[in-house]
Length: 382
Image (cartoon, rainbow, N blue to C red):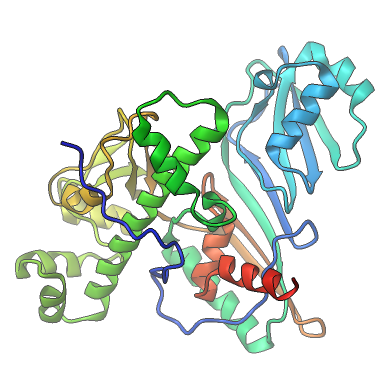
């Protein structure tokens, strides 16, 4: 029997934040003038080999569109063009692309668009593949923020650099109407083989939706333990008193359970929580982080108490993708802010590990939905 999936079909839910400060007020808009992101490669390129590595700056262009443009300029098939990660259209982005070395002459002759600038060229023995990056550096300009909130933003962001944040998928993952995961669920349950990248993306959105719901529940129960006495938390969670006592002693806000799947941070091999005290201490020291399930055919599931919490968000009918594990908790790095009191603009710079969303970080600091703010502003103009 497949696991019964319980979820709220309305994505306009109140997000479960880990931090308890008062919400801030600022204007966020993802545009080429206000949102900048640069990939950090996983390794140093060899500068020799049969693949040309391009460091490309693009504006108002998605990665998919960039690949189409490069294929047209070089005569290559799109599958022959390597990339590490997808970057949004509404941004100024720098990312690395690989193409076979023999296509360089055609590239030089035919690449003419002003929205694509080749910043650097080198060579490598192997092509770039999806996931071949350490992370991304961001620079984002927030508008209409007063001096008091700008100061508090800096203090809070620096605190999150030290203590970390829940690694939610950002609203971009779920399409313009925030409901693409429903199509993904339907495709996943059809039993058919996935056709093309679009169907894979939709099913991935469904995986991500289930993961976000699981993560929200884990943050919520951690908040209950952090903000209440052991006795009150025991009643609210309906857990055994002895379990809550053990969880409350863990030094980190995000509580680990027996059977949680953990991974050395920022990368390493999967393992299980067997000794809660030992794992909790390593987690608090940023040596490891718990992972959440992206359900699929061959992915590792958590065990024991942890799977009791994971099971409601594990769709065993989703076999079209292999599945994966994703860090549930991450630590932003290199956090810096610069405030201009005359224009009331705050420039925020930071680094996140691969697969993490800048908007998730901003939402945790601001304590409001950037997606809903963007929609409200666009609706008011129509």
